[in-house]
Length: 280
Ligand code: NI
Image 1: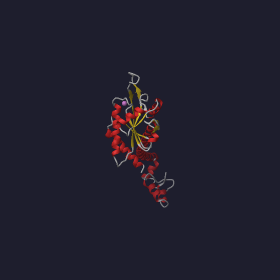
Image 2: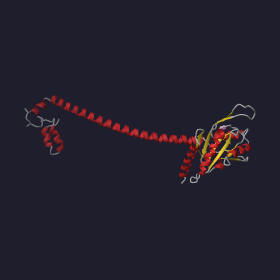
Image 3: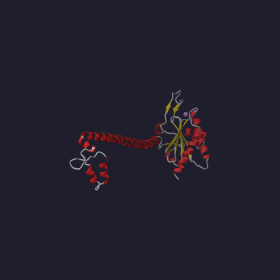
Image 4: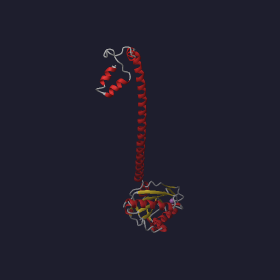
C-alpha cells in the first residue's frame, strides 16, 4: 500500500511511477501523512480496507482475464502461424521425398532391367551389348516360327528404325536387334535367314538354352513352350515388348504391342534429344 502524499513527493524522482501512484487506488495514510484529511472519502476508503481490497481484486481480475484473453489470442495466433509453417515445410519435404522415391524406383527399375549380355551373332561369334555401345538399340525377343505376332512387331521395329534414320538433323544411330527365345530350333543360320527377310539392318542373336535364358532373365522376358504336336512343332508363348537401350548401354524405355510405329519413333526421338542435350 502506498501513501498518496508519498507518491506526490516521489514525483521528483520518477515522474512516470508517481503519476501511476496518484492516478488510482492509492490513498492518504494516517500514519505517515499526519495532515491527511481524516474525514475525506479517500481516508474512509482507507479505513474500509476490505472494500478497497475488493475493488483492487476486481480490477486485477478483469485485468488478468483481459491478459489471459490477450495471451490466448497471441498463443493461438503463434500456433496458427507455426502450424502453417510446419504444413509448408512438411509439404515441401514430402515433395522432395516423393521425387527421391520416384528417382530411386526409376534407378532400381533401370538397374533391374537390362544390362550386359552376350550371345551368338548370325556369324556364330559371341557378341552383345558391349559391341553395340554408342548406338541406340531396340531389342525384340521372339522366335522364327512365330506365326503372326513376331513378324508384325519386327516389321514395326524396322519401320521405326528406318524413320529415325531418315532424320538427318538428329542423326540417331539406332540398331534393331532380334533375340531368339527358342534356341532349340533357332540356329544361327536360321536366325540369319529370318533376319534377312526383314532388313539387312536387323541383327539376330541366339545361343544355348542357358545363354538365352540368362539374357531373357536380364530383361525379365517371359517365355514358355506350348504343347508339342511334334518334336519341333510348337508355339512359344512370350512377352511382346521392344526394349530401348541408350548409347551408354542403359535401359531407357520399353514399348508394348499396343504402341504404334509413329508413337515409338516419337518417344525415341524425344529421348535421343534429351540424351544429346545432356551431353552438350
Ligand atoms: Ni512371337
